[in-house]
Length: 529
Image (tube, rainbow, N blue to C red; front, side, top):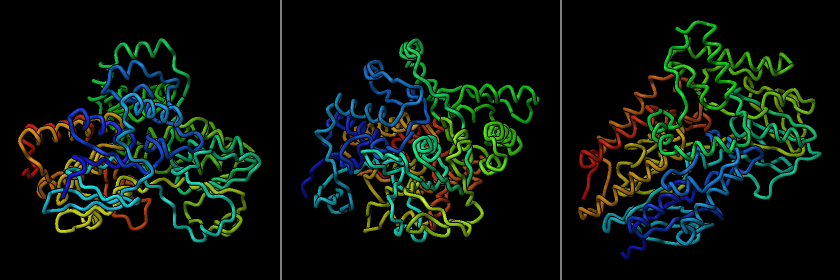
């Protein structure tokens, strides 16, 4: 069988673009296959109102090119989707990436041929390509979850999903809107839709914690300071569990005097953003400490939301940080608007969607448009949409029937020469995705270089190494409070999905050490041939 490419990369988001760049630098032939018409991945698809990053823009950026760092100008503390997509396009142009990307094409099947040790990749356009390696860069949050609500197809008006928003945008002026969900995309979009719509009805199953972004244009003096010391900022970030350079207070919340504890929370709240969860070192380890942070946020909700009943419905009852902590701009204030109604469906699911709206708790709600802010089949959804077949024709779906199993979140036993950038079992969604992506891409590129230098063509995780890593991922999760609630981290938002805490929670520094030790041991845990 003729080899078409050394590597086929699936996806042209930030992971796929940097992987292509590194493959080219290493002298490997590569083709990126991308479903969209352009680059950007999650920032190509997620164009809902208010979409923006929850990591500060100066840190949510590539660090492989100091020149790129210095030349690109972010305009806001938290970049919007259009600006991030503009950045992705700038990178694609700057490094001339598009000539090796095949757009508007989906990979539907990839089969490992044991006679030739090549992957045969099939697309929805009829391509059949042979490649030594397949590298998935499909993103952790890229397979939209459409809920199985009875009657969903019966609704006569337009239905929109935040994860697959019309590129031309949506004008809600004069429209009545029903919106299902109060996760991250809902928290970002609700304030903007409410400002435009005649009336917005929000259907909430579970209240979420959110911290104000205090977003603002970037101060030029601050930008100059960051650019003058970017290397130091990046180095500090790599020592932090989330890969984000913010201060961590390692003191115990419960052991801190009440007045001082409230002062610390107040300062974190005033600064805004994800750093709130680092106010004390034991917020995700100790129930009592966690409750102090949760109580603080609940008190803020009661301060902002004027109607006590609405404030109570919006106040989360679970552990803070257990589900994804959100960052918002005016979310709770929106529920003071006369054109916004909140319906609590936490104790009683939506009965059905009707041609003119939906029925919940025996009451009919009519609206012109329906918005599904219902998230994603996280971590595994995009991977399992492709029919991957490894040794003996075994499918990835079968291999992951009880939950995803990987070695380092990078490889899967029984699937040689298949790499998964930020796959399940890696820190991925619990970190700043850009440095996590770069670390994975660099590890894969260095691995391919090392194999070529030794005349090796096949690498495969051993079953024992994979089981040991799965055990390590589970053990890390069990230490923290994060694994104690129903979240998309454990697949709880997808009916029938195995309940497994999917990302590695041990932190980026510990993960980098684990990856480096594997390499130092001559790729210990892998069979090479």
